[in-house]
Length: 115
Image (cartoon, rainbow, N blue to C red; front, top):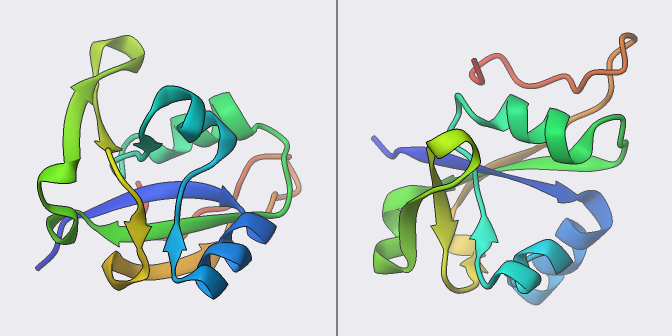
């Protein structure tokens, strides 16, 4: 069984990545030098902090084991370790994608498997 990590991506950026066969990261990723990911218990906090109230987002689940040594778990927000990918995200590592719409309360609605 694979360990999934999660990336929140603007839908147009993800559509472009699918056409290109690789996701090279967001402008924030480019600025920081790696592609930001979250573990399942972190992704809601990431959405609230960095994407609050934004529509048109996708949640991308990737197989962490498929990313090899380019994936590093590094201390970040609140002293917690987050997955950072030092390289491009290949489509071969994607497990699934789904839209993350806003609910009536203005919060993002995540799939059931996200705690």
